[in-house]
Picture 1 (cartoon, helix red, strand yellow):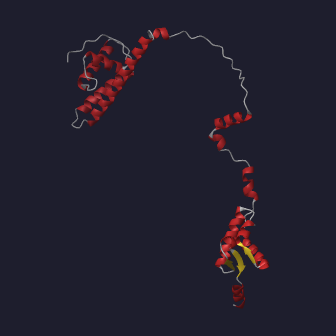
Picture 2 (cartoon, rainbow, N blue to C red; picture 1 turned 180 degrees about the horizontal axis):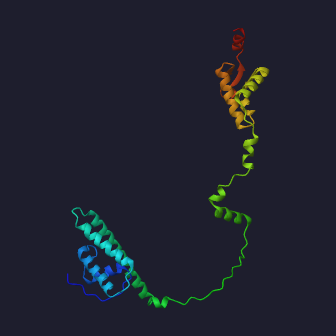
Picture 3 (cartoon, one colour; picture 1 turned 180 degrees about the vertical axis):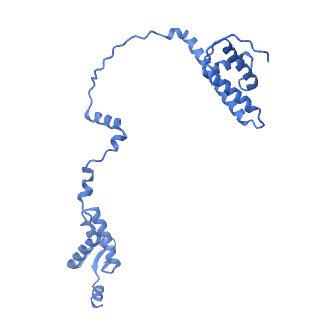
Length: 242
């Protein structure tokens, strides 16, 4: 490639300079000859230094990046170099597309200068005049408070139902059912469950019936809704005689 001849142009950034070099020397942007591009780029940066131009750090970073890609390309296995080269190519194509679109938009608007206007001071009325329903304000507050509000301790009323209800033990329920059957001679299982005033008592009743049947203290007769509890008097007598 011929020795580069440059004008000391001002570029917006390293990608802008690279696109200029690719266009000037008619290089293929999709298959950049990295060795030639490195030489052209570094030559321009050196020219900028010689003419005491202010060089942004990003130009020097790109120079180091190009040198690294060139160095890796000299290795026997240069897969990394190919990946780095593809990454650079993608950035250049994206930047080129943005420049083209910016130019078209500028042409459509008649130039960016015509789009700029002098800012004028606007007096804003900060008085809030809208009226809101209480529920709307509450909902807005809940959304604004977010997780912090959700992490607050729940109100005492939420524990009221749990704390005030006594837990019914299975042993107490066994005595209760046994006393009822001794007096009445027989009671339906359905009626025992119907007498339960809480979930705790309902569960205790069920477990009490199972425990009594297991220990042969009661007989379960009938089926479905007519399933009834009776005292196994034969078993009672055997216990007393034994």
